[in-house]
Amino acid sequence: MIDDRTLIDGLSALVGPSRVMTAEADKAPHLREWRDLFKGEARAVVKPASAAEMAACVRFCVEHGVPMVPQGGNTGLVGGQIPPPGSGAVILSTARMNAIREVDPVSDTMVVEAGATLAAVQAAAEAQGRLFPLSLASEGSCTIGGNIATNAGGTAVLAYGNTRELVLGLEAVLPDGSIWNGLSRLRKDNTGYDLRGLLIGAEGTLGIVTAAVLKLFPLPAARSTLICGLESVEAALALMARFKAGAAGTLTTFELMPRFGIEVVLRHSPGTREPLEGACPWYVLAETSGGDGAALEAASAAILEAAFEAGEVIDAAIATSSAQRQAFWRLREAMSEVQRLEGGSIKHDVSVPVADVPRFIAAASAAVTAFLPGCRPLPFGHLGDGNIHFNVSQPVGMDREAFLVHWNAMNTLVHGIVADMSGSVSAEHGIGRLKRDLLPAVKDPAALAVMRAIKQALDPQGLMNPGAVV
Image 1 (tube, rainbow, N blue to C red):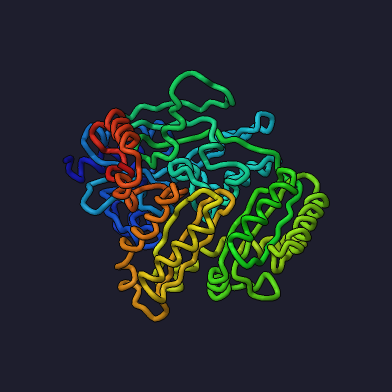
Image 2 (image 1 turned 45 degrees about the vertical axis):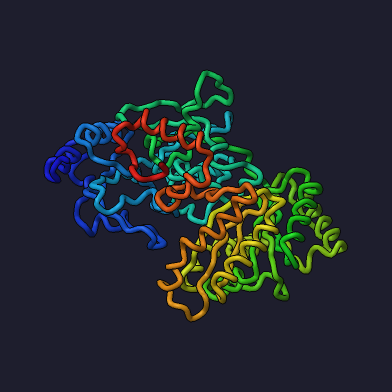
């Protein structure tokens, strides 16, 4: 492999010496995943400013057999953005490629570079009276390129779909260093293989996304946001059915939270408060959006009245101000980040058919508590699309490392239940390095063979994010 001096000099000539970071202190923020599950090594962190510079860096690395790991905001949850120790890789960061190139409210599209944060994309759309509906707890730091690479989900999939449904076109640097300009604004283009779809969710193993054409939607003039307390997950499903039937297609969010999750947020997130008068076993955060606020609130009130009469809801509150809406959302958005303050957390990002969510939560909770008495299941997430983050906090007083030793065994239990329900072991976080070895057991053999063939065809040296996905 090329020596470090030649590598650094060659990359510096392409992007400028100040954009090739080799000092350990400068590289450190790029080499640690925020949950501390992955700590990596890189010979350099390189920050090209354009697709042309990115392509030049890729060609140089390919010529000299240097592995490459693309990285956006480093908010990924499966380790795909972290080079493994000893890999000899360089990180190719999209941080400097963050321009909002165009917002077109007539065609409801925008063209953005991969390093733009999701929050910046949302704000640029809103400034033109449009909505980019992808919404994640990490939206202030995650980047659109990373969202595309992992096919991110979030809290609005129920109404708008995953990232895959929100992208019309892509610009990308392929593993040979060529630039594919697929920045199409067309809603219909039936001219062969879907290369756009191939790169979305590929986690940087088939190329590096440098820009994208995104779909926009009318900016809702009003929202109705409410929190409901319920006795069971079955009651939450019944309530969701009422909203789908009675809210005239305006339901955009339907998030499930357990009492234990609310307690953890209240304990560790300053400024949060109980959303309802008394404690309930389960909670739902629901939101409708549209053009007529009075009509939205009237529909929500009518739905809740019927749900109360049917015994499906214990208590409920509709936000009457922007501050109250934000307070409701804070309870949901903080749920991931505060769990680490309870000690170790073994996490599962899974999906099952929506109708099977109650059965899955009951079965998985029983299985993990039987396996490790005292552990505390915290299942929460996107009930509307069947994606549950089935996290398990350590028993009170147990040593964190002693708990995390059970990660693989607990994964096996939970993922076995998911498989029995024809679900997925990765609903929205991707495969990365964390779940790569699970694929042979859960993926159709023919599909896995096609994936490997595509990887071999596009990246025969295996230099593009090696060890991730396949």
